[in-house]
Amino acid sequence: MTNRAAATRYARALLEVSQTDSDPEQVERDLSGFVELMSSHQQLGDSLVSPGIPPALKRSLMAELLPRLGQIAAPAHRLLVLLADRDRLSLLGEILESYRDRLMQLRGVVRARITTSSELLPERVAAIATTLESATGKQVDVETGVDSALLGGMVTQIGSTVYDGSLAGHLERLRSRFLKEA
Image (cartoon, rainbow, N blue to C red; front, side, top):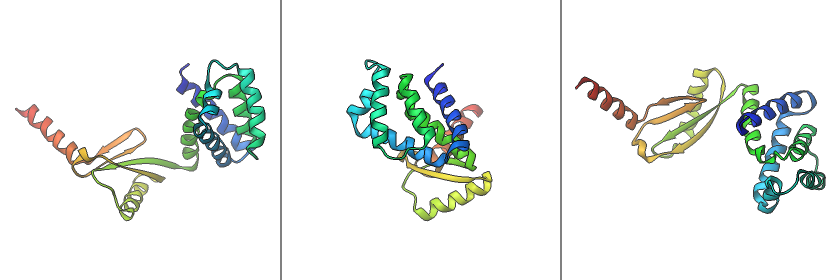
């Protein structure tokens, strides 16, 4: 089983448990905080994911660390201990990403990535988000980016669907059409 598949399974199970035993939003915040802790303290992060450190030692480290972090939702706590036991803490970032995606689906939210040739004004982003919400029938979480190679227009990605309204895209389609007709 690939790491991505394993992370998806852990995330699915975590969301199911979180919905019955806890607040799924709190679980997301707790996991996010732990991932941030691991990345901001490199020696700790390296120790928890190193294959050279035995899982028993990782579990004892987690037993010392988790109570010091304050109140952590029970499902998140159990997951972290389980991952330490199974020497799978290296999957935590992918689990969190998959969990967030599933949580967004649960809330009826879709993620849209808008790439333009220059920075968009906040009012324009809000207008695009409103248009996307009416088109999808869901709440849209918009993330923006800039790619100067686009020349103009925009590329919008919602899930795996890409809508290319860029000038570079239009020129490429014209070029292809001319080559087919020639």
